[in-house]
Every structure is written in structure tokens, then in C-alpha cells.
Length: 270
Length: 258
Ligand SMILES: Nc1ncnc2c1ncn2[C@@H]1O[C@H](COP(=O)(O)OP(=O)(O)OP(=O)(O)O)[C@@H](O)[C@H]1O
Ligand SMILES: [Mg+2]
Image (tube, rainbow over all chains, first blue to last red; front, side, top):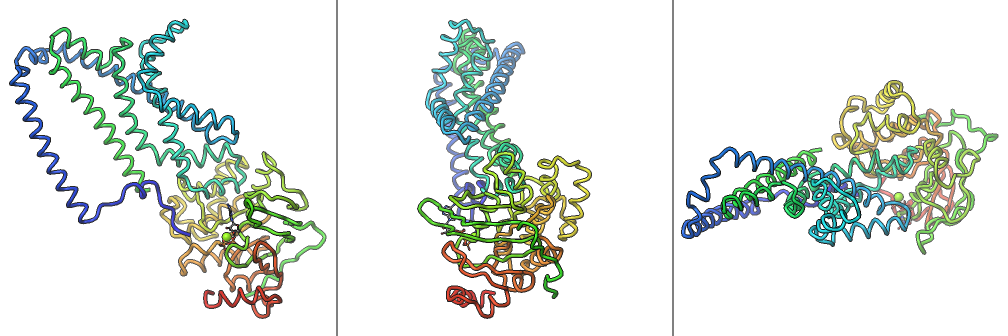
């Protein structure tokens, strides 16, 4: 029998000599291209007067940064709540799909497809416009976190299922042979291994959740984007504020990606 | 080089494992055809036969990893339960060793051995740990107890897997080609453990092509072809003068591989 190939081995091949050369070359080319692009953008900005002091001076004030900081906290709060909720809902969908009951499997699959197919914005509108009419008053953070979570849950469910499917069949058989019941086989043997496979991918999916929380402005939850909009109208400085905010989002998502890559590397060593 | 004629095989007790007219299909494929087999306490039965003849399937029906279409499987005279708690409890008493070891990849060797007694039998951890370490010592991997399975050689993993099964104090052990995934130099260390077990009186059903093992410890060789039992014989007779043409052909074909 052939050796078990881990998901990681199948997805990432260690680059050979030629591949390394190509990677090096393309890295250099893309860095040069990015620097050129940045110069071009700055040139266009200065031509249009966007580099004028009035668009940037308020960034010298600590109140501006405190305001941005509180927005950042809002983003982090909404993202964490949405991420954890998406994981929980996705877990339920996945368990339904792999259950032994056909109707439950169908419901799980339908929920997964539905939440994956519908754009986040529609869920946001549903929770913003319709849910309050039903007499349900959610705290404002949940008005963004819940729809974002629901929208991401199908994706998480699929990811969890791929992890579960990646656990070799023999693990289940060995556990059953010891006299474990199906539930125990799943919780003690299959799921912990599945999770190990997909934790890196879960973290990179969190990037999508973070980006989706920018819909906060619709429901008036003070996240980074909403506070940016306030700064823009206060100082009439569209480009500079968006630029700064974009950089902050990039940093958050870069950090998430770094965590994901580190975990993938650590997991692979096992 | 003692043959296991020192164990007393009792005739009064019900056989540990008994199969009566067992039929098994995979879709349209008839995988087991009217299988009748009885294994008494302390007996070692070697299952042999060409690839695809149904040896693994037969092994796996005994603890119901595969369901059968008709016929009966009895463990110590009791019918194999359909499922649920009863089936799980019965499986706990039947050890199974796989070709690909199947140690739990996310647990240390020691935890692998402790898992069954602690989680399934709800025995105390300290007591189980002591016993597990003794078992690991017995199969010669006690120095690897705190490593992960992937850090061990194939032979060590398989010996640990045997210890994991033994920790449940099984009534019978099923081995499905336990040495065929191993490098040649590791085969003997696993066979040695199995020979010792056999000599201690463990009831064993072993799918293997290791002729030396069969000759040394088997009470009986069961030869399968195309899903049916074709010949049952003593190991000596089976390997030197088989009764059936089918077995002769098979032995001819695997000569030199053994
Ligand atoms: N899960 C399955 N689904 C469909 N057919 C199967 C399945 N498992 C086994 N078979 C078929 O049943 C027959 C018996 O298979 P089995 O694995 O029991 O043979 P074996 O004697 O163990 O062979 P080997 O020496 O190759 O391990 C084969 O023809 C095989 O293709
Ligand atoms: Mg087989």
C-alpha cells in the first residue's frame, strides 16, 4: 500500500532549482513594478493637489488616531464575533452533511449552498431592514457580525468537510475496532485531525470575514470603515483617509496570512 | 522452534469465532461465498489466498467493519449485534491489526495504547498507564512511548498497534496482512511479537503470506480463492502437498516471494 499523502504535501510542492529561479525573478519584477506604480500614484496625487497639507495635517492630531483606533477595535470585535459564529454555524452544517440521516444531509447541503451563494450585502440588509421589523433588536455589533458570519458559514462548512474527508479511512476503522461509538470516533479521532489540516485555511478565510465587516457603515456600527467615513466628511479628505485605512486593513490581513502560513509550516512538521 | 501444541484446545466450549453460510456482496460483486469457519479458543488460523480472494473482507466481517448479506457470525456462541452499544461493546473484545497500522496520528504512542481502556472501558488513567507501558515494553517500543506515530519506523508502529489492541484484553485478534506494508528487515520483529502471542495462547486469525509464521504457529491454514474457502489443512500439509489444484497453482505462483 502506498504511503498516506497529507493534504499539505499534495497542495504545496517544495520548489526545485528552476522553480526557485523563477520565483526569485518574479519577486524582483513585481517589487520593481510596485515601486513604479507607487511613484505614478504619488505623481498623479500631487498633480491633483491631493498631497496638499489640508488633506494630511489632521493625521498629526492624537484625536484622529484615537478615533481610528476605536474604529479598529470595532473591526476587531465584529470580526472575532463573526469568525467564531461562522465557525459554529459552519460546524453545525458540516455535521448535518456527514450525518447518517439523508434528510439531515440534504438540509446541511442546502444551507451550505445557500449561504455560499447569497452575497453578504443581502444578509446585511435582511438583518438591518427586516429583522428589526419582526421586533428583534440586535446590538449593533451583531447586526453586522451575524450576517457576515452566516455568509461565511457555508465556506467554513465546506472547509471543515474537506478536512474531515482528508482524515484517512483507517483512523475511523481503528477507532471502531477499539469499541468506540460513532460520536466518540468523530470527536476524539476524526475532528481533531481534520482541524489540524484546516486551521491554516481557516485563518486565511478570516481575511474574507474582516473585509466583509466593512459593511458596518450600513448598520451604523462604528468599525474602521464607518469611522473613516466620519473623518472624510469632517475634513473633506477622501483619498488620504481611504489610503490610511486601506493600509491598516492590509496590515491586519497580512498578519492573518502570516499566522496561517506559520501554522501550515508547523502542522507540516508533524 | 516449538509448535504451539502446548495449548489445550477445548472442544466443549463454543468456538470463539464461528461463521455459518456467510454471504457478502459489494454491489453486484460476490465477495464471500458460503463461508463456514470455526475458530476455537487458543487456535491460530492463517488465511491465505490470491489478491482479491476476500481475505480482508472475511476478517472485517468478523467485527462488522463490513456488513454481510446473509449467514451468521457468532462470537463465543453469541450472534454479532447489528449495531449500537452492543456492537461497540463486542468490538472492544475483538482486537484488529491493520496492514497500514492506523495508529491515531494526533496522539502519542502511549496515548494510542491508553485510549481504548480509558475512553471505552472507563478505567482509571494511572492504572491503564502502568499497564500500557508494560505492553509497550513487551512489544519493544517502550522507549518510543512519548513520540508521535509518524516518528516511528513501520515495524515499531505495527508493534505499537498490536499493543493498542492487547490493551483491550481481546478474546481474539484479527491480523490483516500485518507485515505487508513493512520493509523486509522489519517484518521479523513484528512476526516475533505475533509468535510470542500465539505461544501464550491468544486466539488469532491472521491473513498473511509469511510461510514461516504459518508453519511455526498456525494450527490450520485456510486457503481462499474467488470469495470461497477452497481448502483447510494443516500448515505442513498445505505447504508441502496441498489437496486442491487451486492451492497448488497459488503456491507455485508465490514461490520465490517467500
Ligand atoms: N469497499 C469495497 N467496495 C467494492 N469492492 C470491494 C471493496 N473491498 C473489497 N472489494 C472487492 O472484493 C474482493 C475481495 O477483496 P478483499 O480486499 O477482501 O481481498 P483480499 O483477499 O484481501 O485481497 P488482497 O490480498 O489484495 O488484500 C475484491 O475483488 C475487491 O475488489
Ligand atoms: Mg486484503
